[in-house]
Image (cartoon, rainbow, N blue to C red; front, side, top):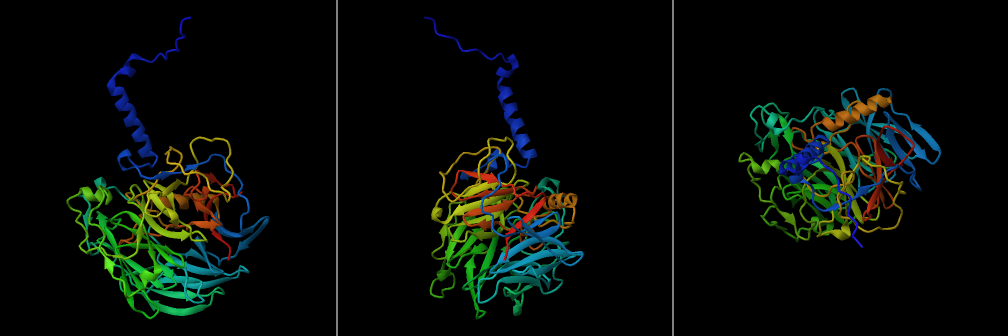
Length: 501
């Protein structure tokens, strides 16, 4: 009996030439770059998560505040209530903490903060530059205010590449270069769950900004050695953080960018070494523990494209890290800007980052510390549409390390960061789309080297983290599962989601 022959695929003869394979790979690389993906040589390393196809209605959605189409709504099941902001206020972001929500809104060319209580009463808190959750005393929200010229909106402008700069080079400086605005000084105010001020304006250490409020004090930070491409600020080479204790004494925390905290741990990002770290708060505030210099060895390319330039010197300051800090393995391929948020039980954290020109969600479980299990989700709809997958429930699925074109890349910094909130949200869907486009084109760092905050903060519905993409896509993911799900909330033009107070 003769063996059956497999049918042969008749291809043109020129496809057998070695140059055909090279050309095909080059074409794929060009397509990836055009669509905002990093070059193959700078692909993120670590764990990958796939986002499923058809959007599904999530189960058990809690009371939420949703910013979409230039307006803020309270939603719980079939109940929908409009949050009435003053006329002319264009909402940009929402933050909820300890029974109080704050909507940051643009009024003219300034930003103001509006407190929203549980009964949806709105109170104007005045000009503000940022807001973060409070962790001390009876305060619910901490507002950051510039001591001079507060509430100035982030400028939206495209970020040219190094090759497009007049000199074609990247420069570094410990001072603000000519033509850039001088760094500002900031203070903070604290408000309780009723929107009442419980602490008047308190100055921060000179040149530093508020990052994370903890039960042992306020953590502040500043970039070290900002990097500029012509007149465009890029990611700084390093950072410096301090703890401001309630008695106003200071404690140096090292060369880190603080991102979020639980009642026991502080999440930090080492800008120079490209690592997430977990600092125990008992060591953060202790005067008995010293700091220890980390290993001077840096992974290749850890400073992104800047490390290849002879004009990009190493930071002059010796980095120090609090003893007891546990580190995830070094990462590559994304830029972290924060802010971050922890799961309610403190078992995982989530933070927005940037890969190429696209926003990503970075997630990691605390029980995976000392590993490279950093998960990065693409917040866009996949190119293919497989059968609908339900939103992740309370179970935990197996981890996956495969990387797909419509899924997620994982772990590490090199590109532009998550950009600022849309500068002109209006009450129409068209303006919401243009606002998202403006945010995607905005510079990731301000003139002093501080990252411009992401327009939204990851929200948690129990163990499910909910993130919003720049195109209004909403993704739900339970850390450790093999897949994330597109969520159908029955709305369009979503810009931000937060739990209701």
